[in-house]
Length: 90
Image (cartoon, rainbow, N blue to C red; front, side, top):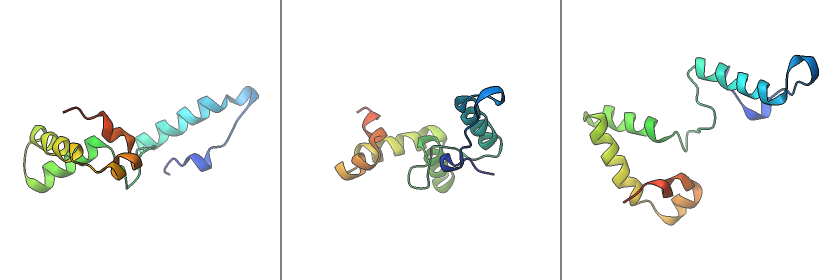
């Protein structure tokens, strides 16, 4: 069962707080291999780095350099859609 924020059940009182329920849902999702907060459009830098390394047959370090270069070339529209692209230095 993947974690979906829309499915968050709010518990109150003796059963626990809303924050505890959210944390537990994230733990369950992590155990199942899903990554809450990431989508197919923005899977995360580590996931993309691993994909590049696998597809091109290069080391993870080299894949990170390739990803960094591509991120620096990202268009303003891409940076608006994913503001974390602005964090890459260089």
